[in-house]
Length: 256
Ligand SMILES: NC(=O)c1ccc[n+]([C@@H]2O[C@H](COP(=O)([O-])OP(=O)(O)OC[C@H]3O[C@@H](n4cnc5c(N)ncnc54)[C@H](OP(=O)(O)O)[C@@H]3O)[C@@H](O)[C@H]2O)c1
Image (cartoon, rainbow, N blue to C red; front, side, top):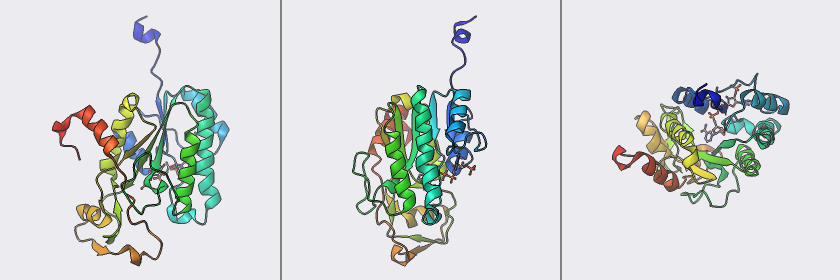
């Protein structure tokens, strides 16, 4: 028996939310991800989570499943909490029994969104909506683990899906085809990330500016016209991530 054979197969990276927007993009970039569907791994059911962990014995868990409908979360609070907080708690409970690295996908919404340029160690909250509250609570559940990384990010499908975009709302979000490869890069270099929290996003810009990149005729609107309270500047400081990428890829690549 060769050395490699005697060591057995390498434990997989398990992904929750593999049918979602980010999950689908990650699976395309990293075919080695093992992504059971909800029928096999329902995060709201502890026994389902424990079965999946026993079966796959992952060395890394990437938790991208969530209740993500921000508007409906206001009227479906119980479901949003069950998936985002209790679901994460079930995964954390199971993870405590397995020696694995827990990667949790979180959001820029954990910040209030008035001053922008939020660093990983800035105080979080208060939050603007129930979805954001549930994601913030989920982060804290994950922080009890010995080995974890919380990735705060924000992405949009392209082309920009609306005919109007806010010129006075600032963000560091980007399109999924920009963000997903960066998240994949982080996952591929997980052992080289010396942090528990990492912002993966791009430069600060208005939503209008972002929208024009994929929808040139999009019309500028003020967030005052939105009818609901919106953040003014929810942008994340991404210098930690930029520095890591530069170390790994080198400056020659012309990093975005
Ligand atoms: N979209 C954004 O702009 C954004 C911004 C920042 C952060 N995030 C975070 O990024 C992650 C991915 O977001 P996304 O937009 O890609 O999500 P999404 O498209 O809404 O997909 C949600 C995923 O979660 C799964 N899921 C929901 N409830 C589940 C349960 N009980 N058990 C197992 N799986 C369940 C869904 O499975 P089914 O297909 O079975 O429903 C689906 O695969 C989330 O953590 C989200 O909070 C998103």
